[in-house]
Amino acid sequence: MGVGALRQRRLRRGKKPASAARLRTYGSRAELLAGVYLAGDLGVLGVWLVDPSDIARPGALAAIMVVVGCVGVAMVLARRRLPSSIGDLAIGGSLVLITLAVLCCPLRTHVGLFEPYYIWVGFASPMWVPRRRALAYVALAVIASGVVTLVSDHAAADAFWFVVVVTLVVAYVTVDALTRTLVERERLAAVGEMASMITHELRNPLGVVANAVFLARHSLGPGIDPAVGQHLDMAEREVDKANAIISHLVAFVRPRKPILEPVAMDDLVAEVLETTPAPAGVAVAVAVGSTALVVDRGQLAEILVNLVANAYDALEGEGALRIAAARGDHAVTVTVEDNGPGFDGDLAERIFEPFFTTKHSGTGLGLAIVRRLAQVNGGDITVVSQRGRGTRFILTLPAGRTAAGPPPSPGAARRGAAAHATPRP
Image (tube, rainbow, N blue to C red; front, side, top):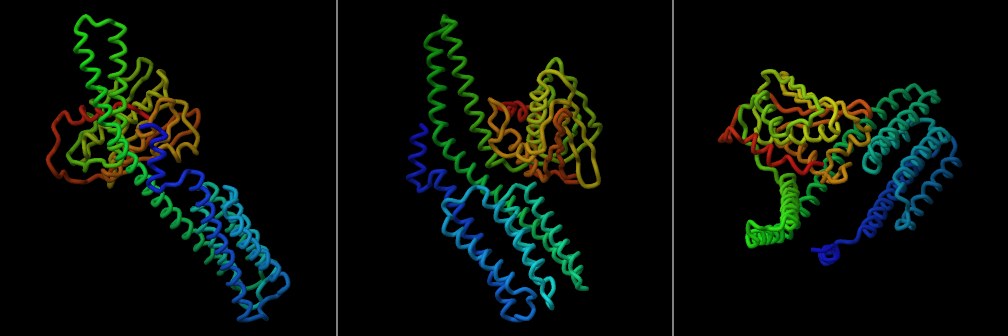
């Protein structure tokens, strides 16, 4: 199916083009921001009406309230034309306005009543900006509220600041975790829909192409022209590659339930290295000892094959690879480390995202499947890398489990490794 047909199908299902989706996102974000700004105005107005004598500088506070109200109205009116940096502008502007309100309009009795507005930064920043900028905004909010506390001569100012900081940090951590969970679920849902469509639309045509190649080769017989045979071989390889990509999509979206069994790491690593031999210029060191754990043997083999193959690619034919394992009280840690070129921390945050790849021919699914398989086995995987100093993948799996379910055959790891050796991210 062509790109135009896919686009028409999306439109028939009521899905908007990307530009319309972005406008809708920015519009709803502006409306939410405007609501927050106007709600803050109403909160200040409520404090003012309850005890007008508590406001030290009513004129200055009124001016700030007018600015906040105008900004809120302007965001609603211009909601379809807002820049993509509206989140940064709103959070940074909020910090400035809150600090001005607290410093220029101190309260005589209810000191610190305005400082909880800083907590809004902890809620908003992880939803609208990347993690590093969100942490920077939270740090700025802590510093700004601390400055306000330092200039205050009220005895309860320190207590107010402590409550604000604790609540701010808790708000950030909670919303950041929830946001990441929701984003991951949305991503999985989108990938699942795409995988179902691709599987349905491409499996049959690929089968037809494979059968046509087979029949062509069979009809030409043993005296086939070498050039024709080369083209048929190329067609078969490309069909196999396309089928492997589809299988990887399905494996990522719907991984099978693990079949737990005792696994000796030394045997498993030996089988993986036999399936994925090292290039001539790469030295492989194994330090797994007698480590054993209860896990799905085939899925762990698939994880290690992807990590080892990625290390080979990073080393570009020359370097060192080390595979190690250690058993703790509650977890077994497996590390795959190379001394290749490494990469920056920004890339480390995205490397496990589906379809994210730095390779020209990669699918971006290998490491996404690795994390998915680690999670379905009750563990997780992280990466530590520094440009020019290599990369280390750290796989953590639970220790102390007992085997359940029928164990796979002794060659399960070998077959699982061979089945998932390509394509790589």
